[in-house]
Length: 205
Image 1 (tube, rainbow, N blue to C red):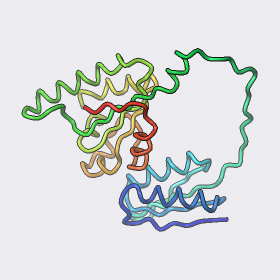
Image 2 (tube, rainbow, N blue to C red):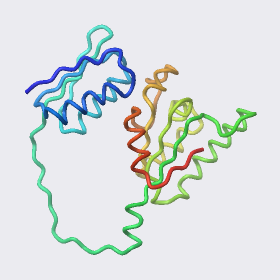
Image 3 (cartoon, rainbow, N blue to C red):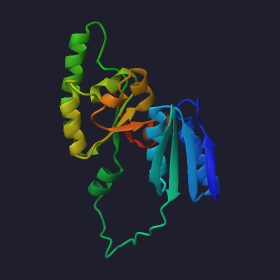
Image 4 (cartoon, helix red, strand yellow):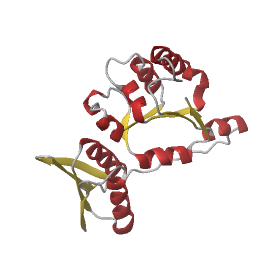
């Protein structure tokens, strides 16, 4: 079964939601989604790939056609012996701290000071230890993940240490910075809402 979705002009995260609904209801062998901007192309491609499809993208003028072909490879699940975890180990697994950033600066009144505070904040996040799960950046906070920003290297260090970083694609597109993003995954509002739901604790700077 093949499904073709016309998603031109739809605001984030509607293209991803249309794909999600089609996959859940029809389980197609092939899915095509047509979008008209880079942010939607990245978000839909990544979502379809997470659902077990091999993704290719075709471009014609200002339109992108994302094609997903079902990957029927089966991966055996191996489980030799399940050990009993301590309460402390279980607590570490279940504790997911999400840091939500919606501004390039911390506070208001002086942007230079606000930028220094944000740098210090991000540099201090490793103190949260293994509970630090994900950083979500929306609005002007997406600039933190772009080339030449003073916070970029600190964010790269966090990602290298296993912290998930999600950067709003609509926001990057708004600031004309999609091509300047240097760290993290371009994301959509569905991912943001789901992340907030899954987190055991949310820190907003």
